[in-house]
Length: 367
Image (cartoon, rainbow, N blue to C red):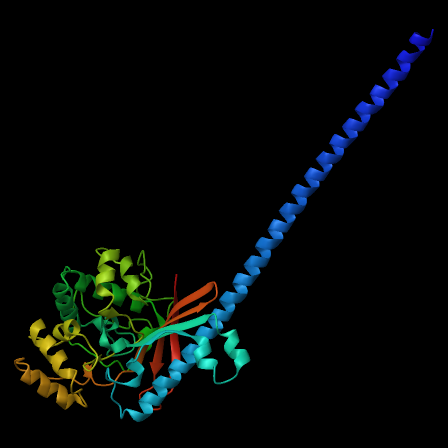
């Protein structure tokens, strides 16, 4: 009787042991699941905090870049006040800034601000935009609403393409594309262009037509299937058939797109550009002129004419609308490295030739 009565007790204790084991396993599973959920929440929170920090650093870097740009504009304005209407490579604006710690600029203000700029670096340079060939010059506007392809400027661009080892046939295609884009923009009503052409290329000029009545709504070109966008940068050339990224890379140091027709600054233009815009001038003659220009810069158009004659260019006639010794457009290249954030920015700045005040035309961030 004693042996038989002990069997239910062992069975009950075994059942309680199994229940305790299952409870422990369940508790471990709950703890593990809770740890996974908490770690996931902490990871997402850390990622969010990191993202906010990156946004803060990027915003601070952009504000530093804006401050550096204001400083650059001050340099351009002061240079215009003291240079007597001459822009040359030896000016203060042409001195690049190597990678420099921001604290070196703020050290004289206070140690606290100097410590704040210890992890921030600045670098940059100013480039004369009118030292390049302006593709906007391919189209002249002798009257509001009239768009004419300049045969003279198209020939100059063709010579530049050939000198760079590219196809000269791209010149006419580019001029027609530029005219088509301008014909759909509000700037077609502007006057006062500095380059005109009595000749027309590829079908003639584009008259005003009914532009005076509801412009942009009842234009004569409203039946065109595709209207090209207005070119705003050299990268816009990729929209034209025949251009490729390697061609753009080859053209970039010598070509630009400015909002208005501009003259070439003979004090800053490269030998390739000078040889292209001066008819009958060889590249070797342009290189000799550039080498002579390093010692004595041009003070007026008369100096340019004498230099071209001395270089052996036959029958030189210098047009003040096509050649100049002063510039109004500048490209400001700046780089800001603020801890993990980095901003590489190119800004087109316009300087008024009379008041020397500056304004920002467009800003392009390099990705």
